[in-house]
Length: 160
Image (cartoon, rainbow, N blue to C red; front, top):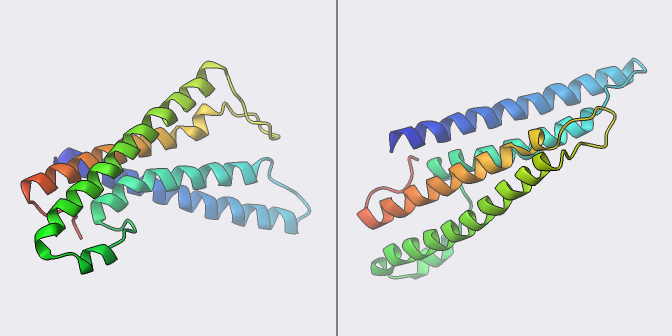
C-alpha cells in the first residue's frame, strides 16, 4: 500500500505547512500590533490552521509509529500475547476511528449544507477550515486498517 504511505507523508507535509502558517500569522500579528494595527481574524485563522495541522498529522504519525500508546502493558505481557494485544488494540482504535470519521464527515457536510459561516471580522464558510478534520481522520482510519492488515500478516507495523 505504497499509495497510502505517500498519502500519509503528504498529509504530514501539509500539516507542517499549517504550522508554518501559524508562525507567520502570529509573527505578522505581533508586528502589526507594534505598529498600532491589527490583522482581522488572524486568531481565528491561526486556530483553524492548528486544528487542520492536528488532524492532518494523524496519518503521518501513525505511519512513523509516533502515536502515544500504552506500551507498559506490553512489558508485562508474555511475548506470545503481544500479537493478540496489538490486534485487539488496533481493532478497537479502528472502530473508534471509523465512528469519529463518520460523524466528522457528517458535521462538515452539515456546515456546508446549511451555509454555516464564521462570526469573526472576516466571514468564512465554516466547511473550509473544517475540511482538514475529515481528510485527516479518514486517512488515519485507512492507516489503522493498514496496521491491522500488517498485524494479521505478521509484518512490521511502522516505518520507524
